[in-house]
Image (tube, rainbow, N blue to C red):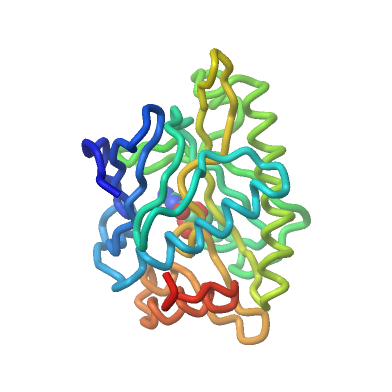
Amino acid sequence: MTKGVKLYEGKAKTLYEGPEPGTIIQYFKDDATAFNNVKKGTIAGKGIINNRITDLVMRRLENIGIPTHYIKRLSDREQLVKKVEIVPLEVIVRNIAAGSMSKKFGVEEGTRLSRPLVEFSLKNDDLGDPLMAEEHVLVLGLATEEELDDIIDMALQINDFLRGMFAAIGIELVDFKLEFGRLVEDDTVQLVLADEFSPDNCRLWDFETGEKLDKDRFRRDLGGEVEAYQEVARRLGISLEAA
Ligand code: C5P
């Protein structure tokens, strides 16, 4: 599909104006960054896989009643979504301590949490995406109390569903990042899930072997990034040949 004007170039995706007003085309790149852009590289074919995994996850979440920005996949690397005003928060859900949580609070990686944790960071690269309390979100006017309640409810519902979905294919969903947006339609504003869901923004551990099947392979120089992303797609029943 012919892409319109480039609106934004992110680390892993570029956004273009879509064919209809109020639509956007998300183009998935192979570029990978970590540690707030300090480490940069490419993972060949990653964009194609992430486009397919996001397509599957967004459609399944819509099926269980989670409102999303998603419309449809257009090609190998492109998907059509509704234009939203992104809430400037990284919403992170954790089932098991890992990554920044382990580092910040001295909790051993792999420690199972007594219940899922929903965490907020300010989406701001210059400030290094600082962790925020809910009170910060409210006092700084980043979201209303009602929106924050909705975000937490949706994040926990998404976690319940995706944990089960991954468990069924032998994968532990350790943690993941979500972004939400405000969709304005006919003078009403609805909070919807936006962005993507892929091994770039979650931690996935093989139940049996503990093998990491996500971007930590890149962050930690473990190698085998493409194979890991392909394995997740394969287990989800995605045939990459028939794109
Ligand atoms: O680094 P940290 O442990 O806080 O990451 C938690 C989860 O959120 C991981 O799955 C990571 O991939 C994701 N994340 C992300 N984008 C960020 C920060 C974290 O996708 N900017």
